[in-house]
Image (cartoon, rainbow, N blue to C red; front, side, top):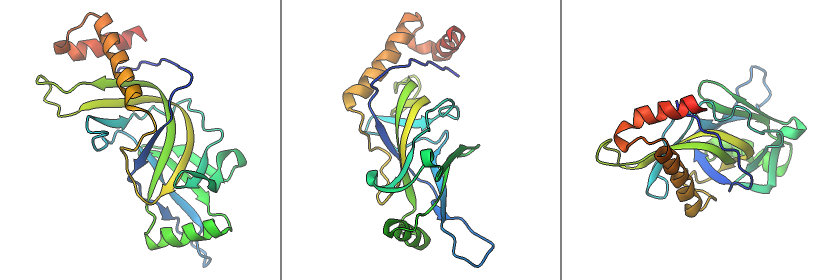
Length: 213
């Protein structure tokens, strides 16, 4: 696979919502469970069209070396509605063959108690994540490949800011501007052009770029 990593500062923050199965972890003891688990990211799953012009997926290696030192679990991305945090040890993040998994014990607060109740009832069943990207790649929709939308593969996420239980999952939501995403696409195009490969030879192009990295 092509892997191009251009570490940049001041990358815009992007937000995506994942169709995850948020649930209360079952326990064997009689006490009611308060551990909420789910997947903030599922690998290699194409999104619905984002902003009407591209689809996106997160590569399996995207979180390798990602900064997760101070990730907040909150409600609807509201920092004032905090539920757990990696820096305090109350939020656990791990990757497996499915994606990025989270687990936390709901705090004994009004919000924590509300989340337990709402997750148990199924009223809250989705989550979202906020992150910055420093390596991605694109395929462009054209007559040759038959794609309806451009496709973006996120190869590396440099920093994860929060994971959030949300009411309305909307994967296309983003805080990165349309201009920013167009610039990333243009950078990839320039990289392809500099390799002196035409659009018909996409497979040979990606192999050439892989060998250079």
